[in-house]
Length: 280
Image (cartoon, rainbow, N blue to C red; front, top):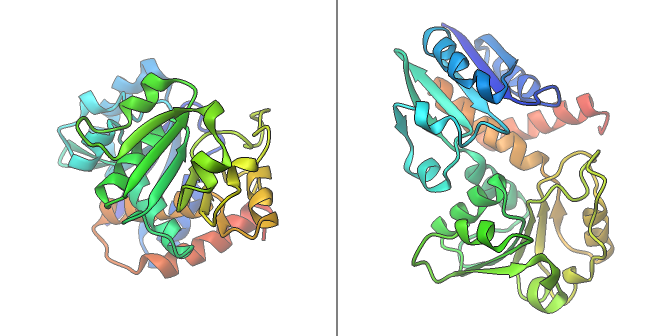
């Protein structure tokens, strides 16, 4: 079989998905193509019609992760709870939606020796990625999740109704007492420190007071100012490349139904992506 796969977004020029998925195909001896499609919001219905007739699956990035949901014929419960889909499988013209971001971050944390289960999580940001991470943390048995964000309404929307383990704090409340000294895991799900964003954290004293594991979902640059601050403090930390790769691995499994060891594949893909980015 020749698989016909794709990724959509607006913009889409920055995506590493064709590289990652293409390398997986080569590694596994899978025939097919994985292409990037620039789809603007008003072009989504037309792309969906195209996908039903021509594709076996596609990934979704900003700004379509929520907008695609009304077009689906079925949706995985976790993706439904996130209100966001990043992977769609096409079978006989029917679209089924999934979200692999949560499993991606969990696998990346496991490589750091960290786990959501029984942990206190400080989550910085309240965007789409933060929602997926928050829901996965709670689903996996986190003791508590603190969401630090600038818009309280967005932060509250991350938390399931009636689940008393979550609380929302203003971004200005980030401190050693409320974050670094409290959390077992800190996840930066904001674009602060990302290449081209133009803004960064004012200071990093919020990391002090404890020994949290820190994951910055930014992967360009490979070492953000946040990660440098973590290393200076001797904290275990990683950038977002692991999450990016693991979510792609789990998406490929959904697309093809193939079973293979995720860890060795992720190691291979990390090396390939670092070469492509000039980081290896």
